Length: 248
Image (cartoon, rainbow, N blue to C red; front, side, top):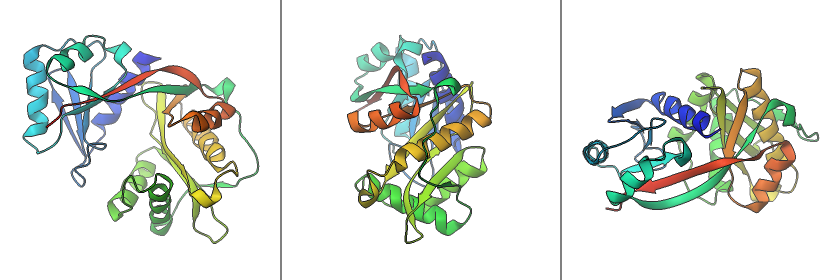
């Protein structure tokens, strides 16, 4: 699974508005937002970077005023982590990822899951996710536009409508590549939690990705509570993802 996930990460970064090739790495950039969570690199599977390769990678970030940062599945490129650590990169985070395949998917009932169609719906979804993640990022026109672009470029965005007509919970899934797709940003507004909304949205997105040809869908989880939600839908532990960055 690690090779598939890492091959997907490479292809997905190459879809970015700005994508650079740098000595065995792909750097994906979001020109409308300098956030390090939107601007990062990933290695090609089985990359064997030299010290000069790492220096070139760092320069690709520094010359744009960005923090050098990578996200990758280390088992798919085992020589990358030691090379980065030698250059001073440190661990920002390390997560297990879960994956689901078609035979394991369980679709819950009880919530009506919708696809957004209007700019207002994308704006509401962006605001919902900002609130759901405790203000980790600020809702913005750029965020709503990224969600809309995801849907228009072969990915998927789904949401459950709140009783007042706004959004109660939502998430997105990438367009499939390399046989898999990444589901991310599952969030429910605090006042609507405990109603199965996250599970419903996760299952709907997973089903949509399978319908578009994905043989698996993977995601990262933020804690035991969210892990249990995903496991009820049919996800299981499949590997490890590593986040490394270079301190200023």
